[in-house]
Length: 339
Ligand code: PBG
Image: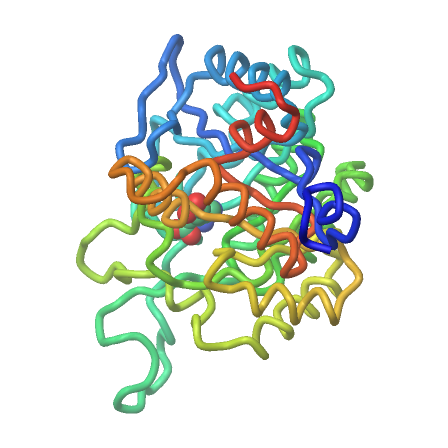
């Protein structure tokens, strides 16, 4: 059954289609801005006008969904730019809905691009007024992310995106209880039909480096500011915890759930696929993209073939949809229309 392509295709178990791909795009203020992201060849920070053209080109290549990340001019301690209805993300959503009406527009809901310290929530002095045991909690003098105080802010951000016309909101902050908080806020604002794609199992690892260049969202170094996101994102060692995280998000009302990164976590995708019926997404993240690009630039691998094999294998492991910076290139290959 492997002798010819016709035979192979007869028994092929997994298929990759442009409809399964979601293209992440970065929007920043200004006009005619198209800043290349150094660590992600082919990826740009775009002003709204350029983003609309980029999305149009993607749509012509077969891409049917995008997810937007905002890079605001102004950052502050609470990330107030996140729920500004005139911010770059709501503006981009409105422009896309006008110019590319067939495109599904998702928005990333998180605080890290909007806070001046770069964390995904507001910071607080931990365990204030409570006696500390030696070795307990964050190191002395270190702030921690205030889970509960962040929930209302995320909910406001999601509502601002929904008001602009977002088709799906996607919280990536990893605060506990945010799906329920966002669901309640959307429902109260009459957006019962806006689904939530929860970044349910998001692991704290080293694969997000290039993204943080693109989104200018790395935690800053400073007195008391936690150096990484290990206090709220998951430990890469844990799969049972991923099952718990997804179960909680499903209970809270998530419509789709996501695993992130993708390739090093294919086992997690498989476990979740076998246990849950909801649509499952995988985020092939910036570091995974950068590694393929870098090796291809050196002529060490065949970029197009590695790209297609990687995306197919993410689908085989259990993902229904794949968020990937390769979305346009892969869609173009799949539809046979090279750009
Ligand atoms: C924001 C967010 C991150 C990514 C998506 N949403 C970065 C982070 O957690 O620091 C990473 C995506 C990528 O690496 O491509 N919280």
